[in-house]
Length: 391
Image (tube, rainbow, N blue to C red):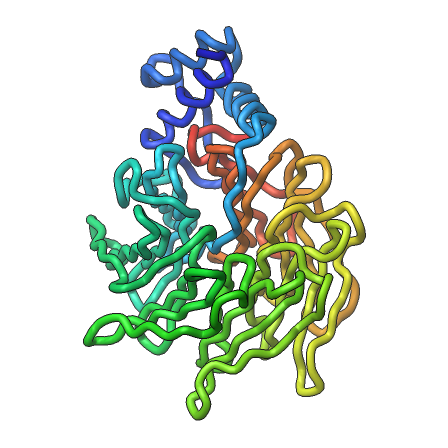
């Protein structure tokens, strides 16, 4: 067995035992507190500090070529807590929560090994936290937990078949709704009602070529996805005529799963553009308007977009295995870049606001990170949620 394989398995096995802390207050565990898996890691790597083990593990896992799944919204505020959904290396599903202003990440196993085949997507619906993910045999699995309670309810969405990428979950009316990539690159929308799930085919075979991104636009669901020949499409649910497709950007413009959101009263999208650039699209009554956020060679993978305070913010994996943050005050022009962290190759990112901070969940290899920055301040603070160390 290679040292790299031993390291990956040992570090991955430690994830279920993670304990966290308030941003900026975490400290490494004593050796006497560590489980047998940590001892295995130290045998492989020698006498490293615990924090160095985490960083080395992430770098080795990335260099081994382990693929990063498509982006999904994996961090939100639920009640008075920051919450993260994360897939374990053994196909388990994990939920981490931390009260805003308190210390201590609280891990919960939502579903056991072998149950989860995609990145999860998380949202708050009313007073309930909900998670969607691809399950065994391409099922669409739905999990829910009333905020502040213990235990998760699980169900398969009847008749749903999903492929390749993470679904996208959100709220529609007072219920959960899910967008998912279906058979033959079709697009499906599932809405939970009092009588059960209602499935709708939004777009037929050969329509989408990325994970979808779901949000509400004026209380109506909308979905963005990469289309044929690297185009960018938006689907809008009209009560009078059903789902209506529109093209946001033409052939050769889009090379990632897009991230769809609302900023103020405007619908916005972020996506990787040609030559690993980063593009922002905003819509008004005259149509869609593109802006280049960052030029060639700056963006690698699916970005994530949100409103934080009075700004539009985007998180993206940048060049040199860096995690990048871009912000633009609403109603202004020009983008302001920041490097959040370097050395996080193969990172899947998700950005949102919790409390009065910008927060980013980033998954590098099998290690779950959490970054936060109080609005209009610096610097960024980093927590390794998986291994309970500061970065």
